[in-house]
Length: 501
Image 1 (cartoon, rainbow, N blue to C red):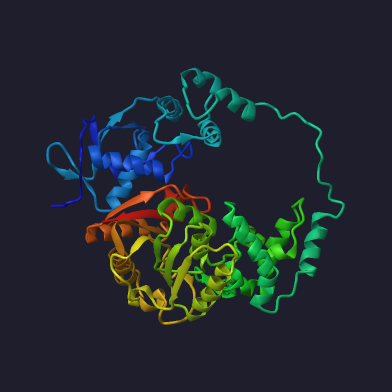
Image 2: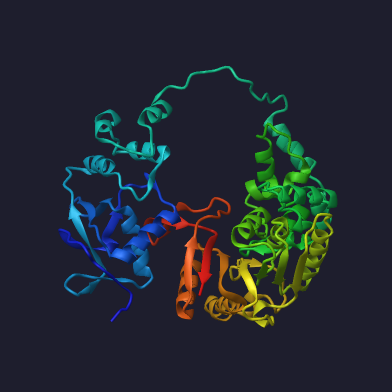
């Protein structure tokens, strides 16, 4: 018998296979991972307690209310969960109640009136929902039945249904046309002979000192260039098996990248100096650079989890973003980290010396090692807190050294078993009783969210996803094709788990 069972604790008009349910709301509501996590927790706590409202058009079962439950049930089925009916039968069906509607337009009107609470209706989503081609709604007719807490309907009408008034404002005048600017950018694109040339245009020692001062003063979105000064080969890392690294694109004058960069820069009213090209390319041309954990976010995490003088373990040092954040938190204490790359380790030592040279550095001990964490000898019950962001299998290929996890472990299953499982087990042994391990890992491409939960379950550990820290866009919905079916899915590039005994 399948042990992963969710009890059905309600009675519907009919049991319907989850796979047959089709969402009708499109992008009307946005749901965050946190909202879905709360709903998932309620289902595990109380069972499946509320029927899904559906409209049957004679061929398809459309979900009118319960889109969050619909989405989660499909996720749970892929994870091996099944539903235990009141009769004791185990199935992949859930209770549904039928809502009568003469056509899709009337069904949509009723959906708006239902307005489920597990999600947020956005103004853009409501506008797209009302004006779905072929199924448009009359807002004035349905407005009296609506009570949407997320939206001020008067403001909504003013934004989307009022003709914009022309107002005098200072406009950017293109005396030189955009085509002229684009041509000049391409013609005068700086010649980079080496990776160091690129770095020299981005950061130097005085600027690094200034960025670190701002970081210690509590500023956000600063300090991310500091480690580049000591580990410039970060720009040479191949991401997602792309044809060129960021450095190769700049040194080889990659035409598609320069064209995209010139296209973006030609539209800017503010000056973009060539020293900003690398960051502009990263943000606007699809150029990818190996990720460094944001130092300001690391600073906030250490401040949240650590007391003064804490002993901290970082099993995967990376480019040094977490070490920078640890020092910027100004808590003193001890930071221990390791990285298997000899080249990166050398840069980390230089970064450590730079950080410790700050005049106001408190009593600090920064211990760095050049070994895979699996091979590192560390003391049990020693650390007060652990925090790391391990590699996402082979997403970023840092070097050709045999010590790299993606070279040691050839398959994802082997990586999960011999690296990620060992990392979690070994880290928890190194922590004092009751101490916490905060793990940051990607959740989209390889579904590490499921992997981490399974590993912790098998090790007898408690894993809880936390939502206090956001990287990049954070969670958002994207549309993906599964076969010929277009489905909504949550995209969250970075997840955070609190792991405890």
